Length: 426
Image (tube, rainbow, N blue to C red; front, side, top):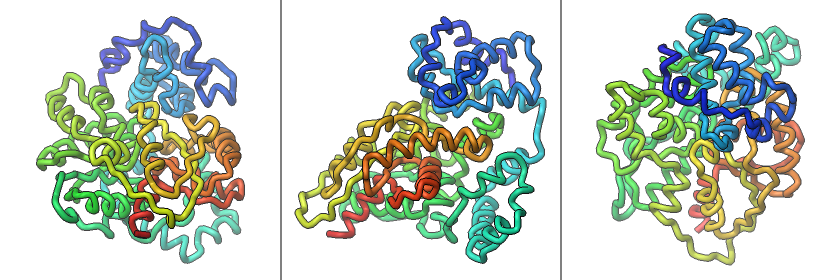
């Protein structure tokens, strides 16, 4: 990777005016209060890395990896610096020279092969149902896991026995008159850990006149790889998905995962493919990608009849960083919730603050992740809501764990699940 000539490194470093605005919105800095974990400190670090003033060492990588890549600093930067891109590019540059066998196994071998990933999830699900995970905890075997995994494995409870891809057909016809042909980008998190969300998505879309196609050969969106220094692998995954989805004549490409829609957005495609031959194809794909809630509210303009018999439910909503910060999508998920009869939307304090999940962050930085999560849970619980809604499978896993951690009896749902439930009640 030509680190020094990457667009964010080449064009954005000198924009920083050292104002410190980014420090005031960084959830990690709020916990630590040290410049080296602040976004401004990371900008300095990337500049020194570019100029050869700091080594491409694992220690420097570890400093940079403390960032959640939540993009709160980028969206609030007065100078318009994409600080998360600078950080991700620097991680990849360092990792290329300090590869890690464990990461290679996970992100290069396993996470690039959907069938192998699904098989691994099935094995983990079977182990849980056989009580092996509980036994390992009781006997202390989990304590030998490396790094933060000995604590983070607690989050991996109740893995479904069947992924969404085994429950859904590739071609799902529209009910009634067809309005659109929609490609469904079924992300890893929804597929493996929240198949009920995928089922609700397909049910709602087909009910509203969409023919839904789920290409069987799709792979991971690549965002976990970007976060873990594997940018070239993210590019390979991106090329595969670009070629695959562009081979169809889709009107839209819909995803229910904030991280996936962020990874497939024009902004991220530019980050990965600017100046490369496939750039035009990447942008053609990105122009069709749309978040599910935006599609339901702005394209299908779903309107539901008032129903006095609808079950009343108090709902609070958590903004996923990859939706609110990366794509500035905040109102549409809330509007969708408001349109569901019986739903009372209660805003929590700090709804647009990170939950600490950030994809794999909770497994690599467990203690910091929990500090950020606990603040989120305090705000959510103060609403006395019955449902905690969000549009990201990573956030759903983190928030579910937060509910168990705080003994809060509440459902964590995607808004489309509430919509699907309403349709089924008619």
